[in-house]
Amino acid sequence: MKANFERMIQEYRGDMESVYQTWFIDNDQRLKAFRTIRNGVIEVIKDIDNNTFGNDFKGSSLEIVVTAIAEQKQVFEGAAHAFYWKPKLRIPDIYENELNKKAFGRFLKSCLQATTEKQLIEEIVKLDQLQIKGLGPAVANILYFLHPTVFPPFNTAIVKGFNLLFDQKIKLGSWQEYLKMREIILDFNEKYRNLLSKDLGAVGGLLFEIGTGRLVISENYEITLENMEKQTKAKMKRHSEVINDAIEENDHSEMQYHLARLGKALGYNVWIAQNDH
Image 1 (tube, rainbow, N blue to C red):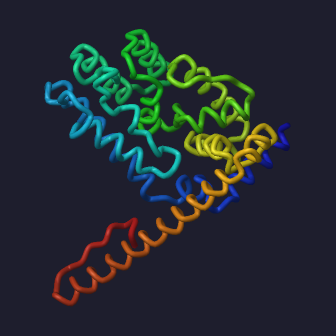
Image 2: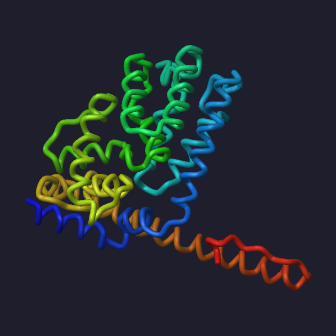
Image 3: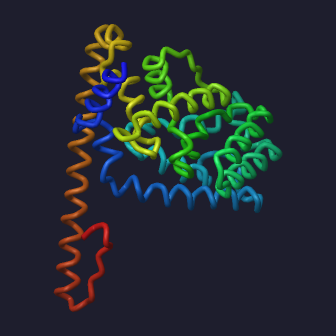
């Protein structure tokens, strides 16, 4: 079993279009996102404390945070959906309910300031006990960018991949289920950390690839066969995304080059960020 796991991880790492290669490794945008999201969370806390947060997701500081997360490649695609204000269902109930809004703000502030894993888990348990309608483990995607070695990313595909790999029946929408999943992921990640990373984004990407069927293992082999056409389209989509990302990056670099030349020609001192050298 250990040899099988090692081969699986090596295949995941070696796939040049996997999220490991296209998002996790050598990605300045990913690294910048941690700072952007952390600063965004600080703004959310301030807005809630100052009663300026508003009563809708659209236009709020939370939208900026979650949009920055959703832009982080395929793993976080759709991360914003759980936070959209759904008036008919009154979820997530942090926009109109002031007590819940304040509780959410306190939760984010405590998680931002926490220095130990124990403190962070206690904050999740306290939030879960409040039973705020619609405010489930999707919040873990925010926590990942605050504490990437403590919380793994979370979405439907990751849960599906987790259940297939570890023969579990973890359900969406439950903090208790998320914490159970997290413990198993941490144990697995520790065993294979030399092939993965202390940053749980790597193992989260592995589970995502299994859940979407791009990485075929014995547990999802039949499912992948049944959905071969769908998987082929998914692989073509991923290929197109990788190509388009490369084109955008090249265009960005070329434009920087032309602006730098123009600046020099006009006699200005030109400064280029270190990560763009």
